[in-house]
Image 1 (cartoon, rainbow, N blue to C red):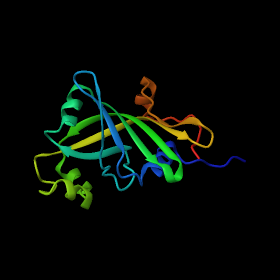
Image 2 (image 1 turned 60 degrees about the horizontal axis):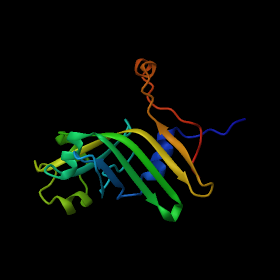
Image 3 (image 1 turned 90 degrees about the vertical axis):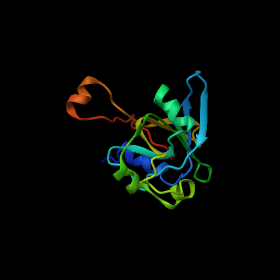
Length: 167
């Protein structure tokens, strides 16, 4: 009898949910990379496995995402030996209801005019792949991989897992 394993996105969420300041890397228009810590706004797992962030509409990050939507997000929890790399596609979206839903005291400390402020941009990251560094085994394991094959888009399945877990 096999032991049931949580779906890959649930395992990913369990590892990243308490890391409030992941480091996001974007590609600048000159080809260079830019990394910055940001506050993850998700308070619970998104049903579509998106990650959400607020930023200033006039920030370098918004400009970077117009150039290249690819992002890398690093979550580190040294106390639990959990290190996760998320690779995704980010977009700046306009969704007032989502801004209000995600608004938090942490967001208010950075953006004092509230979620209705037009200077606030909402960044949505579609997770394409997530890997966890298993410090005890000195190995990377895949937690989540978006299946972008034509068959997956026809069947509605868009995630796969190598079966590995991060301890």
